[in-house]
Length: 131
Length: 387
Image 1: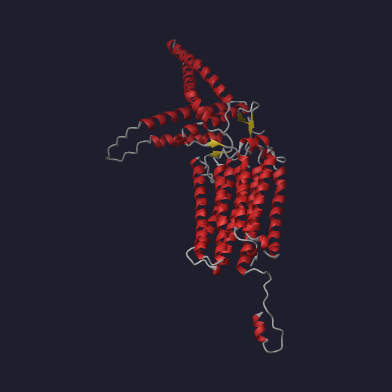
Image 2 (image 1 turned 90 degrees about the vertical axis):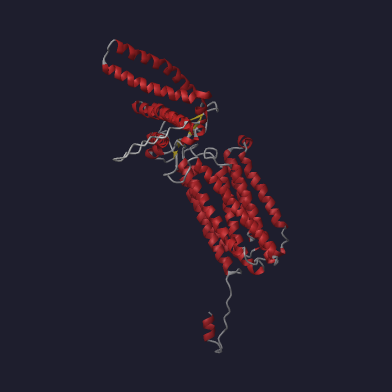
C-alpha cells in the first residue's frame, strides 16, 4: 500500500483539481477565433497536447497516488509507456508519407480538399477529381 | 511452497516463508497489469486516429463545425470527469478514515457525475444521428465526394419522400371497391411541389447535363454545384452569381423556345423538331423552377443549404472524409463510454455496502480504473474536439 496518508490531508487533491480545471480552460483557449488568428495551428496543437500531458501527469501522480508509491510503479508503467510511445512513433511514417506516396488510383478515390478562395470570403471544392 | 514446507516439517530443513515480489496487494497488482494493457489498447486506437486524421489530403478532414461537434460540450464533459475523479479520491480518504457516510456521499457523487457524462454523450450522439452522421454506411447520409453515386442517392431519397408523402393506391382485390385516397394536406402538397422541383430541376438536370458534358472538369463542376446547394460549410458567393446569370439566361431562353414551338406548330413544321424542342423546353422549365426556388427569399436555400432550410427532406450530403471521421469518432468515444459504463457498474456494486476501511482496497482499485477513464478522455477531448 502507498504511504501517501503522511503527505498532507485532502487539500492537495483540491489544489490538483483546481490545476486541472485551469489547464482544461487553457486547452479550451484554442476554441476562440483570436487564438487561432494569432497562434500558428501547429503550435496550437502542440500546446494542446502539452496541456493534456500535464493534466495526465497530475492525475497519475496525485489521484492515482503514483507520487507516493514504491519503486514497483516503474516496473508496470515504464514498459507500457514505452510500448505506447513506440507504437505512435511506428505509425508516424504512415502519417508523414501517406499522401506523398499516393498511387494514382488511391488519389482518385481520396476525398478532395476544400480550397480557400483568394478573397477569404468564400471557399469551394477543388474542381478536379484526380488533383 | 507451503506443501514443501509441510512435507519437510521436523526434518531439520529451512522453513520457507512466502515473500510477495511487489509490495502491493494482488488486486491492485492485477488492476495495474490490466491498466497497462488498456494503455496500449487506447494507444492503438488513438494511433489509428492520428494516422487517419493527419494522413488525409490537407484540408479534407471535417472541422468540428462541419460535424456539429460542440467544443463547450466537450469541455463540460471534461470538467464532469475531473470532478468525478476528485470525488473518488475524497471518497477513498473518507473510507480509510472509517467515515462511511462521507465515503458513500463522495462515491454517489462520482456515480451521478459518470451518469451525467453518459447523458451528455447520448445527447451528442443523438445530435449526430439527427444530422445523418452514423458510423455505419447503411444509415449515414454522408458522401465523401460529389459523384454519380451521390447523385443517385439524392434521386433515391427524393423519390422515397415522394412515395411517403403521396403513396400509390393499394392494389384492389377482386370483389372489393377501390378505396378513395385521403386528400393531401397543404403542407404535404407544398413539400411534394418542392420535391418535384428539386428532383427534376436540380438532381435529374445535373445528372443529365453532367453526363452529356464532354469536359470532365465541367461535368464535375455541375455535380459540385448540386452538392453545394444541398449542404455546405463555407459560403461561395460565386455560386450565387453563377446561378443568377443562369436564371437570366433561362428567362430569355424558355419563352423563345416556347415561341419557336408555336411557330413550328402553326407552320406545320417537322414533327421531330417540335418533339426535340418540347423536350428542351421541359428541361429548361424544370431547371428554371429549381433556380428560382434556390434564389427565392434572398437566396435562402442557396445560402444556408437545402438540408438546413428543409431538414425534413434529410437529403444525402457531401462531406470529405466525413465517414472516416464518423468511424473514428464513434469508435473512440464509444469504447470510452463502454469503459465509463463498466466503471459505473463497479461503483454500483459497492455503493449499497458499508464503506469503511475494509472496503478501502476495493475503492482504491475502482478509483484507479476511474482515473484511467479520466486520463483517456483528457487526450480524447483535444484530439477530437479542438484539433
